[in-house]
Length: 270
Ligand SMILES: [Mn+2]
Image: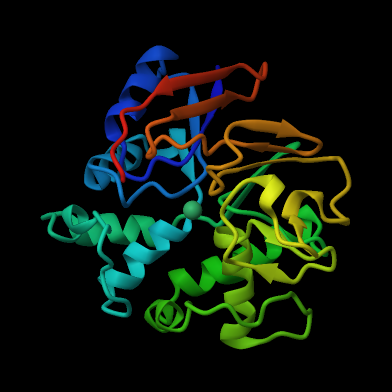
């Protein structure tokens, strides 16, 4: 039995199929985890969602910012941007089932020493606290208030965690950290503009995984969202977005032995 953790797909179905072939993925025996951003920008969001959903409990995917953007757009709460390519999902005959499945995905997944999130965690959160906060936001997305949640989800404020936060502000900080965070101040104030290399991080900020944090070393956090980092292993983290969409590679990390598999990807996005 093997468990593969796969980087950001963004609608790149063909590299995913080649990866599963390469590792001889057997749904009767193996598991596959996805760090989120299943959809958007790439050529086949619909195919990716259908494939992962068809794997049932053999697959675990956490929500990424592009997955949430699809839900927000489907609800009519955001304009579809130039470059968005999830119209195939919106036009599909099984659209309602697919969107319902997507809406019920977790934001954070913990299994033993492993934890998986799309973007990052704030320095004041233990893994246990992050799991509890993720449940709060997931419960809202699965409740009858889910449409209100999506309508009020966008925004960069508040930009830091506070235990006293309530309501949609509280949910927004949880979702922004888990699906959009790359850098923050050492005190955990989030910055959402920088997407580039580590060397170019603006003064006063650090990568979220390098901020002095309370998480300890019991867990390794698997995440995506930051393609400039590529597939990279550091103390307490493994990043897996190696820029499949940008003509680089789709990466998978095998939990049992740390083997890394990479599939070369054609350049699709400009
Ligand atoms: Mn992302």
